[in-house]
Amino acid sequence: MSVTALDNEDRQSHKSPFLRTGEEYRQGLRDNRRVIYQGEEIRDVTTHPLFKRSVDRWAGIFDAQFDPATVDVTTYFDEKLGDRASTAWLVPESKAHLAQRRHLLEYSSDQTFGVYGRMPDYGPTLAMGFLSGMHLIEEAEPDAPAKIKEFIDFGRENNLLSTDLIADAQSDRSRSPGENPGRLRCVKETEEGIVVYGTKPVASSASMGDWGGIATLLSPDMDPDTVMWAYVKMGSPGITFVAREQVTSASDTAEDHPINHLGEEIDALIVFDNVLIPWEHVFSFRNKSTLAYYLEVCVLPHWAILARMARRARYFAAAAKMVTEILGTDKIPPVRAQVAEIYAYSTALESFILAAEDKGEHTPHGIFLPDRTNITAGRLYAITQLPVIMQHLRELCGQGLVSRFTKADLEREDVGAWIDEFMPGHNITGRGKNRLMNFIWDLTCSAHAARVTLFENVNSTPPPIVRQQVYQSYDTSEAEKLIRDATELDQYRTTVAEAAE
Image 1 (spheres, rainbow, N blue to C red):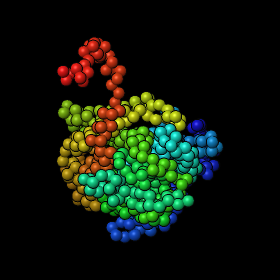
Image 2 (spheres, rainbow, N blue to C red):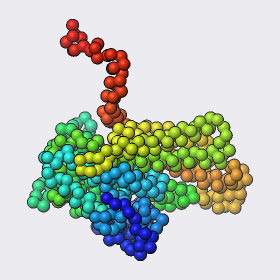
Image 3 (cartoon, one colour):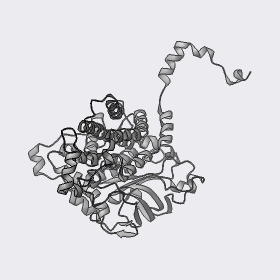
Image 4 (cartoon, rainbow, N blue to C red):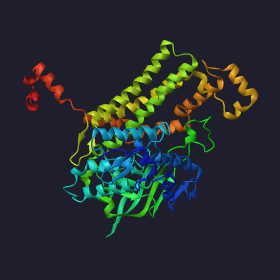
């Protein structure tokens, strides 16, 4: 697959039919989808205060596909289509393709400083994950590979924004997963497709997406009617989104809240009330063997999650350097040691990503997947160390985080003058120092920061499960053989029967 770019003159005079502008994306959301927030039914998510800022962020990424400064990051030239398409739908067939997707991910993360866990380029990774695992199910479901390839083509040709819907609703954990009353399940089979009823929780930004990928994974002993891989249009009749409580304010300003004013990722509980999913969008159904394929199918989504966290770690590192410089503490050894811990965290996450890409391999369907062991170990390190890194940054700020002032305060002639007179930083005014503290507050202390940290901890499985995945995926065989040979350990082996005697 070629990633050749058009020259600048062609790029500026030509609009690919496979790309959408931000306004075209907004128009696609005006499809009478049913969204409820705090008891109110929202008819247009593009204008409602809860959703508008997030929609605007994403619309900006669609518009970036036409900006000469970002076109080679957000799009690529697709030889099959004969035109440019979104890099979000670039199927990685090589290490270079993974790197190109990562550059888009870094760009999209920069638009919100990494606090949106499900940017537009993330969703297609689940579809590509399905394709990467098709060899595991195609003997039992021979039509599956063609169906998922058709959907990926459909997503690319229409520049769709998709999301993934994998988790199951939290309920009584003393009961088996199959007894979960919220479990999405088929209640009727027709010539057109399957009719599903139930829920999917924590559907990150699905209310502002075009399509959602459904997967039943990691849950043993399920009723076959609940086991499915499929895609569903988010505006389908019978779907209702119940949005969670907002943790940022539409009145946040760039000066008082440099991150929070950008909005937040609004996830929701999706209720499927007898929703028809056409057969062409059902890739696997009632195949219980797929319940064991979570790690295989989710390598690309997990790679994207870790790459975003690695990008976010760079913001922590830069903020640490900047705040110690403006406080004049950057020459103090204990301070430098704390900053070094943040630098090491950032470097480690980047190393996990680069190592995973370097050790990647092709699947039978031609997908180039990063190394799963490095991705899994990296995710474990990223989420377990995140609270530690955030606390380091808080400590580096000292009293600055608890003594911040608003734009309204600083615009008063007397207060602004006092802050500059009494609270200056090193080579910076008190008002300038206050603005950096506002940024770090949003990054580490605000309600939004707390929500993002909670999300990272449970995003695609919490640490206890990730630890098990690391244990299962790590290969010690080569090193074990060297140790056995060096110690001649094999000659001392006993059987169970001999040991019992």
